[in-house]
Length: 314
Ligand code: NAP
Image (cartoon, rainbow, N blue to C red; front, side, top):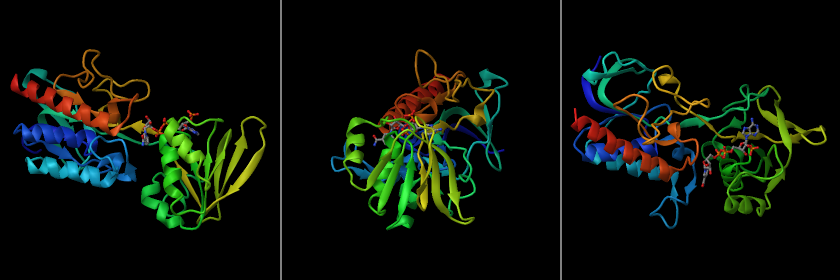
């Protein structure tokens, strides 16, 4: 077991890194867990157009890299680990929180949980079989360039799906946007942009039933029309699943309160306080409503300030 840290931050996305900037500037040398996806969801985003301060937009990866450097400049330390289990507090008055990582156990006096969320899966035949090199992906920024000149399908109707579809038009000849309803959930500006793009072909009221392949690679997607019940196959060599995210909170189940969808429950008086004193929440793991980078950053700052006050009153 390592030394008792004053404060540990779980997650190195926008929320965790902002908390790290604040806590390191306060002289608390936080230990930041990189987590399963270092840099968080922004690393899989192409252009971020709505983060204040970047009138021309900024590449998502570059944005988190800048935040990380800013935290390191003030003394934040990073560890390539992810939380496996948060252990119940035996004695809250001792102000000692214990959690297990992949290979070792950590102790701290305050904890900021900023573990974000992970892409949801469709759980349909072919999805798992062809995931990765076979043609199924959850990240157009990461894998889009492999589909140059090809036809792909994006599943979903929210901002993420629309953003993925628009990004894929840079490489692909045709992008089917397959949505289970007849209008997009995405924001108006994004939806209009997608529907005006000639390479994007919306497929409405389409329930994806299976991702079909030749044993090695994806060759198509079978969809059922929810109105007529008719089945058809869309020929494509890639399928990008973009149907939302689920919070990364399993490691704390049984210790912290979770809502029915797995989001951390916040204190009704302050959304960065968890159900256990000394444990603070930030970002998408505790925000089922806004889920924006700038909101996650704001929560990270608030969680850090709350953690610092908690440590100071110890
Ligand atoms: P989302 O808004 O929850 O949308 C998920 C989409 O997937 C919905 O259209 C939903 O259909 C569909 N879906 C869910 N489960 C499905 C299933 N089993 N089968 C088929 N379709 C399914 O998630 P998101 O697009 O990831 O966005 C999350 C948040 O991030 C939002 O607040 C969004 O505004 C924000 N975001 C913003 C930007 C930006 O501003 N640049 C970019 C990306 C994300 P229904 O519509 O029928 O429910």
